[in-house]
Length: 140
Image 1 (cartoon, helix red, strand yellow):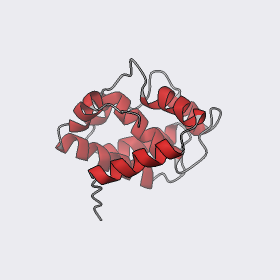
Image 2 (cartoon, one colour):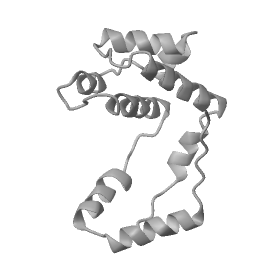
Image 3 (tube, one colour):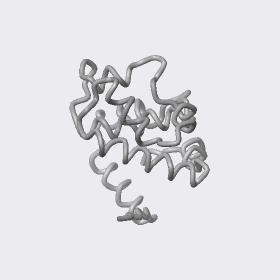
Image 4 (cartoon, one colour):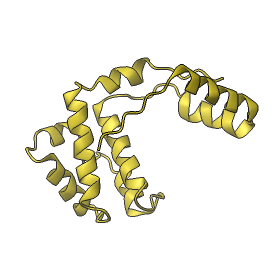
């Protein structure tokens, strides 16, 4: 199954109208902290790490003292683009790394999704990086 998400100008306008109507300090603080951040590192490894964090966190608890939280805090981070791309079987390499770090929940699904995303990023020559680097969010 392939899903194509097309965001049109009227979609953006409806979201802006909603935000303007429901503007509150909590939203403004979240925008400043999470959207309009300065000095954000945007490279292949940070995209990989955040993609993996999203996949892991939506499937299981991910607080700071959980297996997911502890794994995401590892320095150096065990999964880098360099060590992933030097493996012939990306999915299996991710699976083994997760298992070695006590992350066994959805151990077949998460590596499959992550490997699929990596293959897509490779196929598109990581165009996402350029989009992330040049795309800015303008509050309503």
